[in-house]
Length: 490
Image 1 (tube, helix red, strand yellow):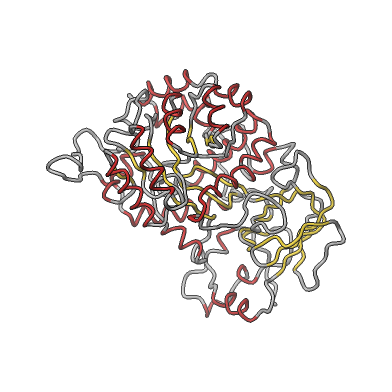
Image 2 (cartoon, one colour):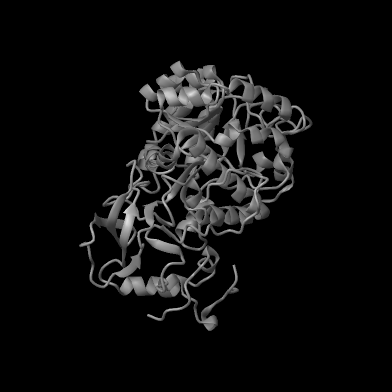
């Protein structure tokens, strides 16, 4: 096998022709093997590193975890040199398709061609951030997921929720005041996001059931309902309760028939309790939850999925939220979130890491993800942040049951789990900046797409970034230009 200069960026991986690699793999009797040696392992659970360990990957699975005696004849060897080896990160609340500058107005002006191409950019960015799985909580179906799975573009595993499901004047009703309601005479659809299938306005049990089933038909692995007001929207006051209990229950029943579950956007304590009583399995945001309500969530195995930027003092300076009614909503929301951190610490409901990046790309996107990593760790500790972004989030993804597009184990370093692996310069249990965390947000110095302290990013047994070794996987090698049908640059 010819060796070329080591790949320093994921962009090299997305432009190569994969036909040669596929043909080579088809001729092999056993799956390709990669042996990581001399590693200090964070397994996604433990509070300290296991030192001096080796990890053998066969195909797309972790075949074995052992001491320095673990070996495999013929395996490609990557020497961690006492670096940390850990699971790929999981973002349990992302929006790959909500990617236009200018917020909702920008989305209203956009075509699927522009939104779709930007979603590829978002996928690449998440993977370069060490995030190897995302739960897309509204905005798109399974098209990008299928394209990533086919190896045509680089990106994380994607758990799609499909279109937002919102009541009229709910958090997912992105119309402006002059646009007509498609559910009322003359039944005209003036809204771009509804025409593109990014959101669905559903009123009443029958329409909610139809919306859920439509999303499931498009490959959704879980569903997303809007069960309360939000800050970034305009038609839904923050205090509002959205969807009657029977409507949420109908969505839960329709999802359960496909062996999957419903997550809801909701802030208010009353709205959270209504949703948990109806059978939902994840509360997105949930900043106003009382301790009693968090205990109810914990007792029912309901995950709390909160982006910590939502309670950051930084948020009051965000330009996109300075106009009314959004600024008043923001101040109201932050006032009602004062007890959130202490309530979480007191009850410890199951929790999954979230970034909730919307309407931003490139440097601004990187800055938000970096700050989210740091701020979550600052509030709850590095270990809690890392668990929420690995093993705990993996448990939430498994709630999709038979609708799970990736039914193996995620978020842990153990035998039989998917080989989604990061090698890190430093110990993230002690220093969260080594996985990209940054105490500054949109005032941070802009950075490029690569995090230097993440020298290796592996997803599904494939190394997409490698700055440690002279060994470059075949699908990352520089191909003969005569075999390419596309440009060599991403």
